[in-house]
Length: 610
Image (cartoon, rainbow, N blue to C red):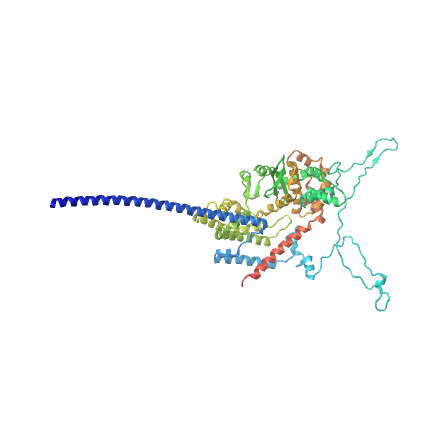
């Protein structure tokens, strides 16, 4: 009986052990399945989180792009800085900024408020008595208008009462004149055509009735053509200075009393483009002698067979010793454009970060100078994506820009071409700008390597652009004649950019080259303070006399015009011989901008908490 019980017990134990082992196996399978499910869930969660983060990043980029597009269409183009970003600096940095601003304001307050003549040296300007207000502002304060020019023709319209109206209502006797009340208006007389008739006198010998001779006719800008130099200058300036397409010029001529078709004007422009090309090539030769050249590019449509292709205008502005702007025309934006134009040039080239200039820098003869305005734009666009970092970078750039503003006030232009005390400017930049640049670079490297920055974000683009261009961005501190920005070239591309909105395209490659030549003349005249119409008229009248000269021969052979025979026609030298043809409106606008900036600065000072 006992043996049976032991066997049953052993059997029961075995069954329980088998059941336990089975349960353990089932538990292990369940745990493995749960672990697999948990791992899968974690993976799915991470994928969803990553997808949401990517979508949030994409939405942020799209929202930023929409804001930029809306701002470009209907917003302000000024890149204003949020004053709250100053809170990102330390107290020592804020004290330094306050001291710089107070010093700048004190310098401005001590300076007289009289505009200096653009071609007058600074020391001579300080010796002359200066009026604190201009005639325009004096007239405004007195509540009157500016006096009208005395040399204008005057027509007097006398208004009198009739005999009946002169009778006194009291006694009926005639009233006598006791005075005259005067008021003036400005009337406009539209331009009129004038016929210039060339009469060539013939001579003959009465004795032998032979040896007939005739007085020669002066060489004309367009041989056997109808337009005289004044009409030629008007046509050129209307399109490439006032941005009028030819059909509008056709309308203007029709209102003036004579219909000149646009096809005829187009033929005139073709001939005039060939006439002025030697002078433009001479200007190009002189621009390439500059120590620093500013350049940029802008697009223009060109008609081709059945389509419109995109061509390019490239402006090149020389330094203060070679103050000319020369436009180049190319069929595309390849590197061959700047490479061919800047062949054998050595000096500084101030441009954007376009890779097509790399072949120019590769020779080692040309040093790259980058533009802080371009770098600033990257940080400004990244404000909505990474406000803190973007505002810190904008603060550094603002401090550098403030130093440049102070230098412009302390060392103003001595000539209209932009000559200044370059040695003092370079010394000031080394003293004040260099420490800020070093601090800025240190911050950039620390944030880029230590911070979390998404690779395709706008803030990453700002970091990458600034660090890749760092040496070129800092190069402006090497010399005082280098610029903190490339606004000189940006202002030049404005002319064809406005023009293409009106005349839309050029007809062919030759028309594009002619347009570049005309833009070279018009912009060079304005850069040197020359009234464009007077200079163009005299230029077109005198250039035909040089057709047989060396300059035209070199131009026809597509060689650099080294001949100096056309130098007297260059705008800066021509103005010395014609001082009454100064372009006054440019000086007036420059002075208005200076006064506006000074008023803004004074207003900001009044709002500062004491």
